[in-house]
Amino acid sequence: MLMCLPLYGSDNKEIRITYRQLFDAIREVETGGHPNGGRDAVGDSNTSNGPFQIQRAYWIDATQHDKTIGGTYADVKNKAYAEKIMMSYWHRYGSKAPSAEELSRLHVGGPAGPRRKSSLPYWYRVRKVIIRNLNKSKDN
Image (tube, rainbow, N blue to C red; front, side, top):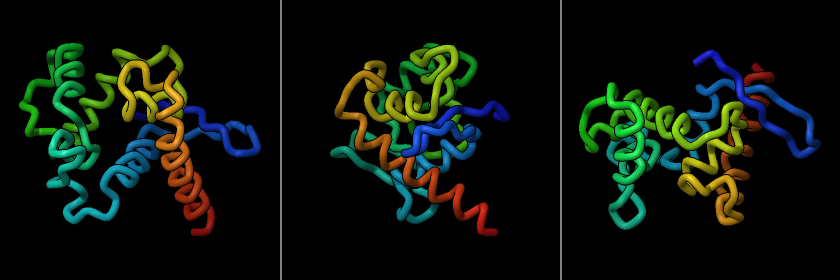
């Protein structure tokens, strides 16, 4: 996961981030304060599970796209497995050169997420976490 994704700051300047940075920000937005890294987190009226709050339909789409993933829906509680699911989903529905915004909005809004205004507040939360984390790393 060495690829970098573009992210545009509030000043419209491009910042490059890694998939790891994006995963960490999405996990923090989804289950940041939950014990055990969000492994046992359940949300959306018991329809989303794990550190990234993945729903069953998302998991089905991802495992149908990449049949080598295997596993069961319960495995989305495992962070590394959930990240494989997200990558498969993003490869299935994302553009050839996605941005961090596109992938975040796909994650929260499904295949049409990047076009839905309703996914923008989620993206703003993820971007805020990414920028905060980037600023923290500069300070250290």
